[in-house]
Image (cartoon, rainbow, N blue to C red):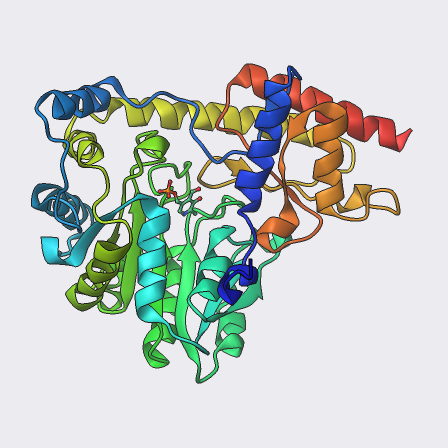
Length: 393
Ligand code: PLP
């Protein structure tokens, strides 16, 4: 069958592809250590699960309004208003099937054929493909490891053309772990205001920013940014709720209403059960988030030490999220010409699943998710270390 042209514009999510391959090897009885999935290894907090089960018992198992229940839209708005001094109402919030759908809705409603969207690289794998699906062109602006993967405002400015509609920012960044400093963000806001460009700000890892760094959202310190910013966030990471599929977008009521219209014809509401659990996640005890955060910090320190001991590896300390993005260019040669081959060999020869840097738009790197136990990190890093040391002999 001849498939629609638009589907040829995109590839399967490389992170999902890598996790599937690692899972298939595991199912075949191979002892794989999988660092590829961007998924917390903790269970969903007990109080949140309990509310999900209660929703089922209470038969809260039917359609809800497509944009989600009012109480949770209000709850999300209230959380943001409390945190950032904003004045969002429920009409400015849509609940979606994960942050991924929130992003998809926004991009689909905000761009059309021929529009350009600026995306700093490394980027989360989904950004460029969603732009392509919507008929737009992703315009990549590279960042550099020796500048801690920070965006250079003047380079974003050089990428602007009359067709530029959106700048997608992601802080803390997946895969680099970089957190946008307040000053850079302020300058980017000014730039976007000047050129009438909207900002989609993906802050899905906002709960995981390590001291001394601080999460900065454009809508917090720059009130002028509120009119041009669209927030994407999720329950997946902070509350370890990846499978519940619950995320949201916040922005102008006009765009949120358009997203609702789109969602009403695509997926309808996110799961009613997840929404009830989401209410508890937002308003209930936050202790489990603190515990997860402390554990990620411990793992971050562990993996940084392990990477520092590996021959030919250069890695920046992540400032947030739960990924490291080491540089392996010292190991690339005619046998291992690129990051895809490097990760394939790590998986096939050492049984360690990682994701090639090229999936995030940066060659010569690979991504390790440290959302896994210290034991797994120890064993996986031992295998990678042996692989690299062997190549040096
Ligand atoms: N944004 C970023 C940067 C991510 O890394 C992810 C998931 O990996 C998402 C959004 C979407 O997550 P979900 O659809 O589970 O909310």
